[in-house]
Length: 232
Ligand SMILES: O=c1ccn([C@@H]2O[C@H](COP(=O)(O)O)[C@@H](O)[C@H]2O)c(=O)[nH]1
Image 1 (cartoon, rainbow, N blue to C red):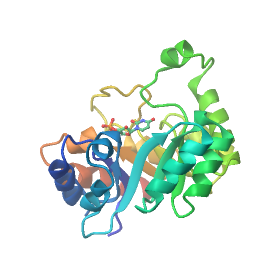
Image 2: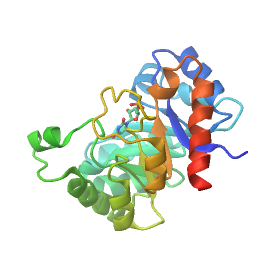
Image 3: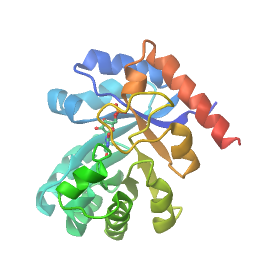
Image 4: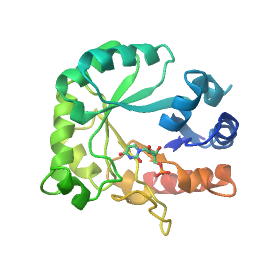
């Protein structure tokens, strides 16, 4: 059985919890994601801990956003950990994204377009006028032009982004919630079924899995749903 295209967000307060979640979900999913909470607390050692013996892909979600020289150095520093994916903010601009791509040639650089926690009203308040989808598409085109091999967007925009950037770019969607699950701090959300049907390649799912009584069973259930969508 092939594992489902899900990156489980290991947003845990301690390494033991993150490693336990990783062990429970890796039979069912392709990827585990390390974000700021774990990386800032434990540093590079966290990668080996969550990778375990299984060789599951590790997605390092640091959302780098700084001047190109600084991002280049940061990307080079983490490239030695061999993450499959590393995030940068698309809003950092072309030169910054290109710097990350050049500094980590064996890692897929994914550009985060507009955070899925931002509603249209939030985006308007920070000066992003018009429908969220328009801004996301603009940022996506810029990022791909700079060499990003993957994009992070909400599942609500994934069909439009796919139409804009074509089939080769990996589209990654956080803001995924199973039917009936609470959105929590996410604003632009959709179900796993919709995300995949609209063209997402990798679904980032955290709390709906890690907050479940049995994270392994929760991951298996969502993986089974995705298999049904894919097999029609
Ligand atoms: O736009 C973005 C970019 C990254 N994230 C990250 O994804 C997970 C989502 O976790 P949930 O518990 O499923 O909400 C989290 O690690 C974020 O840092 C995102 O949500 N939106």
